[in-house]
Figure 1 (cartoon, rainbow, N blue to C red):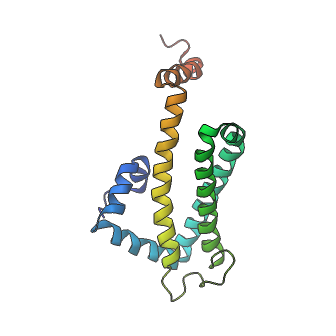
Figure 2 (cartoon, helix red, strand yellow):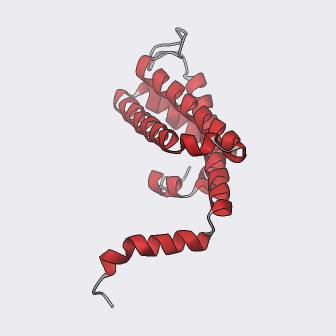
Figure 3 (cartoon, rainbow, N blue to C red):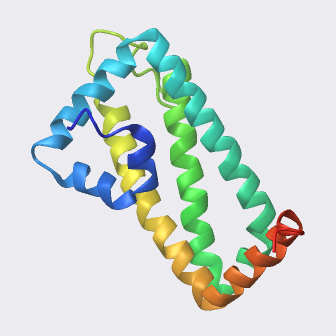
Length: 165
């Protein structure tokens, strides 16, 4: 994987992440980096914090949008997918925090065993998250057209531009 590509750039471009996950050259290198992260206490703590933040944000979004999504049969499948994603994130967080899968003694953090379960689930969850983001935006843009989003952004930003004619 190209060392010049930073994590922020990858996070901003889901197609780049999919490209890496699909690459016979880059995907194994990504797995090696993930394995190293699981055995390094500092990087493992960073990963745990990142998963905690992701879990918190996801739960907030579901709390805010749950009523709307479950009230419509059109959106209930999307809601189910978001709930599945939260469950997967929680499972990954639990593993990093406790060194075991929920409900089983699996392996200790950074132990001598390879953390295959975590890595496989993180890679799978990443693919699901990218697909889910695309599906969510597609539905959002069918419900509310892009012009509305642009007008709304202009309205919300208008006070910041007052006097800058």
